[in-house]
Image (tube, rainbow, N blue to C red):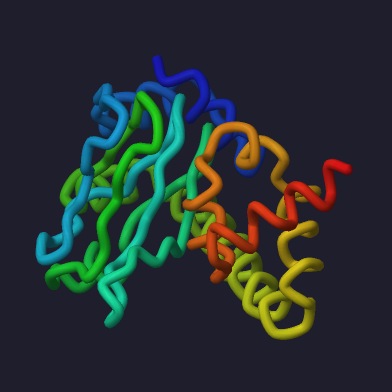
Length: 191
């Protein structure tokens, strides 16, 4: 039984015991050690990943050969390269664990079969996708609207769990800041 996943889905749609059995049979649990890859650049992203326990990051290597983090995922969050998953094309991204993690994955064939068997899950995934797009839009707005310091402070206040669990240089990459600047901001805000 995938307790966290079932609990998360139940926040958005009503599940009965039969539905829970259907969901459980389609997801594959896997334990990953820190710094293990679920996806590497050039591979096709074949699965959607739900974080039961742990922390992951998605990033690409920019033209300055620097890692640019585009997404983090902790407990009860989803992570995947949706373009690659949907179009079956090679991904420009890496998905890597930041800490030891327990992940539930569903491949595209199982995903389609699950939606066929349990159409109510389409509603769940629509809601999750809408929330993901809305969060992405808000992040872009904040990137343009807030000063670098305000953007950092907003992130710290909104996601304190990341500050405690994710290395500072990764947070800097995600926010588009240098690690040195983030270090300065941390010192300034601790005093």
